[in-house]
Image (cartoon, rainbow, N blue to C red):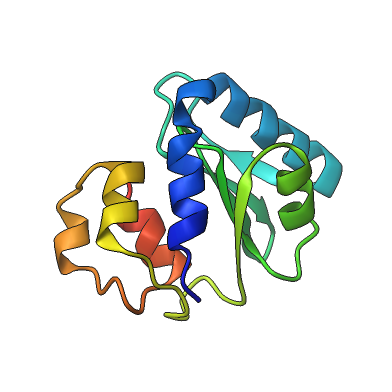
Length: 132
């Protein structure tokens, strides 16, 4: 699934989004979906993780209105309702995503990890690690 347009929309909205908006979304998702939130408030990290005991259900960018969520999680719809652009995946490790390097660079800058990531087939976990 090509997510270039979703990533570009999130990047274009960066100017009107702050880490406080991301914090609000993460806290809402945690409360409404009964998920544990893992994000360092003191040194805002690039991604906050929303977990159930079996693992992550969603990750929310700390700097962009962007959420990646498991397709069967209610957090995907709730993140969209809260103002995020949403990418849904069936698995954190399946290489089911693709995105132009232009969109990734616009959204995340150019972390070194993007140079070794296959932009034609990567997983949500690959994106999470590359954009840290």
